[in-house]
Image 1 (cartoon, helix red, strand yellow):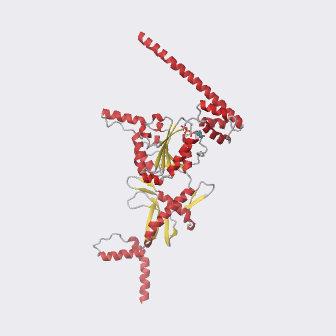
Image 2 (cartoon, helix red, strand yellow):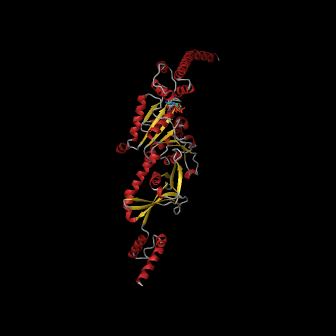
Image 3 (tube, helix red, strand yellow):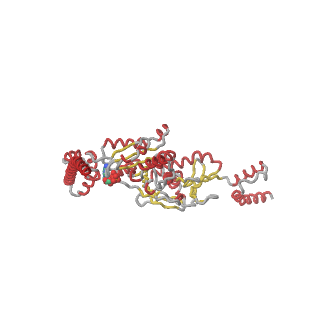
Length: 474
Ligand SMILES: Nc1ncnc2c1ncn2[C@@H]1O[C@H](COP(=O)(O)OP(=O)(O)OP(=O)(O)O)[C@@H](O)[C@H]1O
């Protein structure tokens, strides 16, 4: 009899237990049970369903913002590297390295992991919380409640650390560009990306070697500066202003920086960002270890005009002036040192311009743009790098003539690279001779332009006097 009762009650609990655990209301009115009875019920429920779960969500959001989660990507990388062998259903992704595919867990696929003697379960799931309009994707971690301290205190940090390492090892760097943001795009993708395969490195970038070394050292100090930035209480961010004529290598410098540091590039096209608050949407989606670039910043927005307009408004007392529909200087300054300082780390911002004198000093003051780098016309040392890149030579008897001409004439590295490319296949000597011809032509043109300018300057007072005389007669 006793055995029968035990068998039947055990079977009943095995069937009913999970149902009670799943459906029992969490907050029954306390008046219904005495405290003590309720505690027994809680203990029973815990006994029947002792697992705890933690969701690592892909995107974190509150009522006002949405943010990609680094932790989600790290968990994904960890599971792909360490646990996917036991899975049966996969999701394949291109690695970008040859024909290899990376196999990740498919939605719903459960895998086990063992750590410190504890078994935990991972499952990628998609669900919708009560009251939420949108489904959310997450990795759900389940473990026995007795392992809570081990899992939360040691296992999760271990997973994130290993995931970060796996991401770094398999990562293909990306070049992001921003989409047009509409009012509906709160939940849409604000960045698109392609994989970054730019060949420029600091070895192939043509510029004065001492200045190049200064920049590389500065980048290295930044990359290794986690503790330094924490100690001095500054956000781990750095700003570079690249200025110089077209074709001197500003974009190439950004690519070299990204290749050197192993960072992604976020290329911000400000002309399609219609409001200051849209910059915020872009910013919160940017991942750490990235370079944010705004090219030709002087052309991207009326940075000088906004201050003038502000002055005019305050003098006329007209606050209801039509608001600028585009990003303003103050919006951009907030972007750089407001929110920008408050979230994310290990980020670099780069502005490029052909006209540094047009920029508002507030935008480029030290602290916002920490290092101003002038990209200038090709010097002889820079030419040597180009000769090595394009012709594969370190020395040549014609280098002397080229050195002399480069001291007298301004030619951009882009123009020199073009000369060396167009004469490809003709042999080194012939290439260099072609370049010398081009340099001589450029020198002759510069001399003619200078003479013309002098003539115009000399003629100007005589012309002014003549027109004044005519005005007097009238
Ligand atoms: N310093 C340089 N070192 C090596 N190559 C260079 C350099 N400058 C220019 N080039 C060559 O010229 C091309 C154009 O250069 P790049 O776009 O980097 O110049 P830029 O200063 O950004 O020009 P722009 O102001 O017009 O955008 C590059 O693809 C590269 O081949």
